[in-house]
Length: 51
Image 1 (cartoon, rainbow, N blue to C red):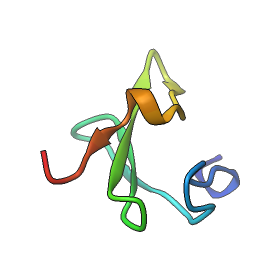
Image 2 (image 1 turned 90 degrees about the vertical axis):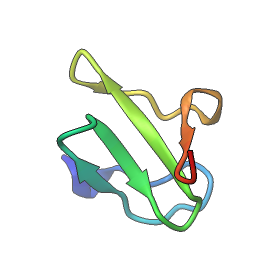
Image 3 (image 1 turned 180 degrees about the vertical axis):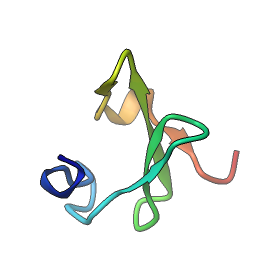
Image 4 (image 1 turned 120 degrees about the vertical axis):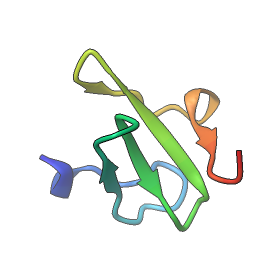
């Protein structure tokens, strides 16, 4: 399913961080959380990668 998801900001592919339960967009510098198995693809919910 990861292949079907793209970053809503940049439309680029995402990588999965199993330890943090996040989808990473290196192009946008954001990490989108996965909560209860559901990716939360909202900019307001994303964490900046430099945090």
